[in-house]
Image (cartoon, rainbow, N blue to C red; front, top):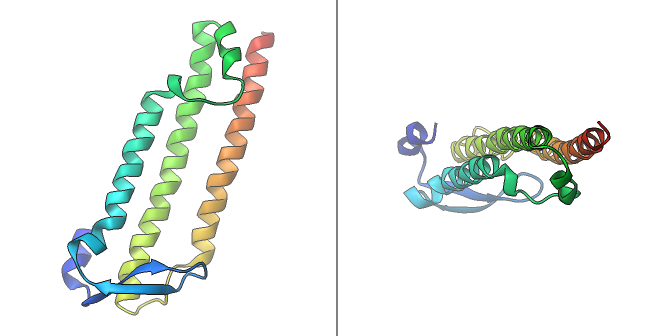
Length: 147
């Protein structure tokens, strides 16, 4: 999307939006100013993949209780952690796609900024996932310790 949109952008593009979703900073179109969001998105994706790959190293509450579990049961917990990381990664990607789309549409004056309801809904979903998966992992550890 970004590679197709870049040549068609006007000379000034929004580079920052305030909390109400309106652009509050504009810059001359440049490769750096426009592709900064996709670069940050790529860094996040890489971090999420590394986090999923090294899920055995993730620090979380009650991690010390995993040492009492058999390797098979520990793997159940690590697969839950990987599932959580990939789900959060999906929603982070949706967030970055929305931000880049908003930059493009606002630069062309098609919209007036970020769709706040979509943006804050994604943020809310990410926080809900964090809460639910920490709860789910905690319950699963207790369950596995009993069995």
